[in-house]
Image (cartoon, rainbow, N blue to C red):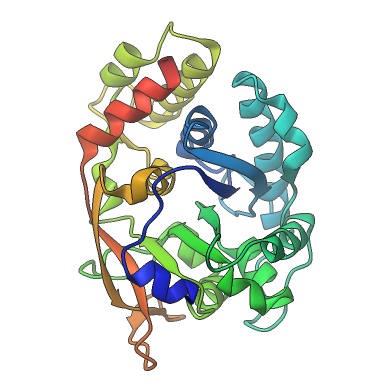
Length: 305
């Protein structure tokens, strides 16, 4: 059975699956939550590798600088989680974004994914949880297009199809990469940000109640989020969205506990920040609803059990 058919028949993961995580961990405060969640749910998810993704904003001088800072942030979270052994399976990714849709950016992360995925099959796929710009994953697919049959990509990117545009950070950073991964033919789960995953907002009171004082990992996650929010909103009401945990949550029992999804024609990101229709009729899985409280119950329990 072809993997696309397997995927569309709703035979979604039921745990005990192999996963790689691609993350721009230094960019925000939610990537750290996602990595820690994945590590703490090792009963269901077998982490095989972690890839540092590039990003460019006020926290980085260049995409490569963002990638390197993310690499060191990954190592920091691994240490706090008492999982430093995974450092050997953590790889630096792209130093820049794609310049076009045909040329890969060579990196240790892209090469590892291209080689690693060759050991999987449509019947036993490798799940790729992607929570940054899709540069590393697109590059791996450009290096070895045949791996599209062996992987399932779960990507937090873009906005809801009902939103005014698709100019979300992960997608807008590297639209060429988004077009490559969505056009690759690999089974694809799209977790849109505004209008869907934006439901995953938390507050200082909630973070302090559930995480502070429990262990060094939960302390870091909570305090990092609180400090970031209070750097711009101290003395005001605020909430922060833990966007990236949605990609890990989908992998736990196919997301059936925490979210609702349906099959839709694969959208095509355009360079003007919108979606176009895909003429080939290929389908992807589109998450359209998040059960926020159920997901957060599992998330906080994973950090403090």
